[in-house]
Image 1 (tube, helix red, strand yellow):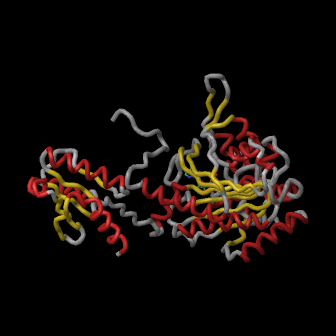
Image 2 (image 1 turned 30 degrees about the horizontal axis):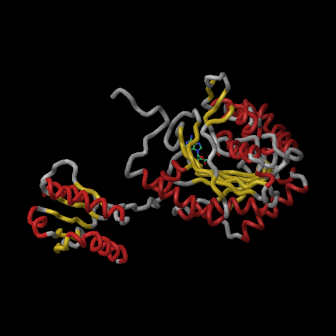
Image 3 (image 1 turned 90 degrees about the horizontal axis):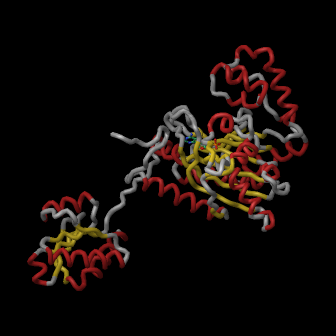
Amino acid sequence: MKYSAPKGTRDVLPGETEKWRYIEERIHRICELYGYKEIRTPLFEQTELFVRGIGEVTDIVEKEMYTFLDKGSRSMTLRPEGTAPVARAFVEHKLFGEAQPVKLYYVGPMFRYERPQAGRFRQFSQFGVEAFGSKDPALDAEVIGLAYDFFDSLGLGQSQARVNTIGCPECRPRYRDHIKRVLSEKLGELCPDCRSRYGRNPMRILDCKNESCRAIVNDVGSIEPFLCEECSAHFALLKEYLDALSVPYTIDPRIVRGFDYYTRTVFEFTAGGIGAQDAIGGGGRYDGLIESCGGPPTPGVGFAAGIDRLLLAMEANGAAPNLNIRLGCFIVALGQESKVQSAKLVASLRRRGVSADMDYMERSMRAQMKHASRCGARFVAIIGQDELAAGVVQLRDMDRGEQWPVPLSEAVDRISECLMSASRK
Ligand code: AMP
């Protein structure tokens, strides 16, 4: 074949798209329940937004961005994540002037030039929420609770939040120095990535997946003794609210997240059975982000989940939905005159809200019946020569194998009634 989908991207074909829609419907539902409103931002932004927002010394900005010059020689980047664009929109549209907190959510594709593997793609979809304008740890708990309820609604309730705090620009440097002190003598035992992180972003060593690094990192201990009073109080209240909301969680000092914009609360959810790429969602508080996007000082907290991985996790955990989407009625017709009647009936059924279809391939009656059951038709209406002459259709209940004549003039009413009563059973 001449063309194929670019490496790390996929086509989602019928059979799969229904599952995507199922998840998307759950997303809209949970956000409505929690009072979040949908926002849609462009798929590309000025490169600078991500460099400043996510941080120069991050995996995404250093090596994963799809960056290009447009015809006006402006540097643009396909969005690798959703928080910086939403923050940009918050500032641009002066949403800080509205009643706070402003609670937003998004769903859509993101782009990262990563090495493709199971569960890791170059184009993938995320659902995320962002709540701007409040420092209240109750809001952090709400966001974690929303994430948990969402995963639970997909049958992934066993995925619990692993929660941590990374302090603020005031207290974090103390912990950073502590990490460097503890690891200074073991530098040679760390993986090459962590050796380079040591100088630039030592906290990222804590979440390295490499076994030998993990063992060394055990000596580092939690950030808690290094926290300033406010960060410490924030973390204590967060735990209290999570308990109050009955959101299951564990405290994990290794959760640090990969972006520069996080402050205080950070959290991650993982799912079993999907291999090494097992993070299904994560987020945290980012009190400095709006200011770095040129807005007034505005705290914020949010989270994002990867839809591609959720589908894999649902499959692996026996939670995949059984989406047997059926056709209401297939019209089987033979001969030109019957076909015109068939087209008329299909149109009337569809206008009545009944999904309906007919043959466009000049199939025999038998082949049309076969095709109808391939389409999952609940009912079939047959208009042969005899039926045409008698002004009737033979209505066939495909599940029960029963068949009876119905006047053509009443066919739409009868078929809709039958479908209605079938759906009640
Ligand atoms: P992040 O924005 O890196 O915190 O990622 C949030 C979620 O998006 C992760 O937990 C994953 O579920 C998903 N995700 C991130 N990168 C990818 C990728 N390359 N392919 C598929 N899903 C991804």
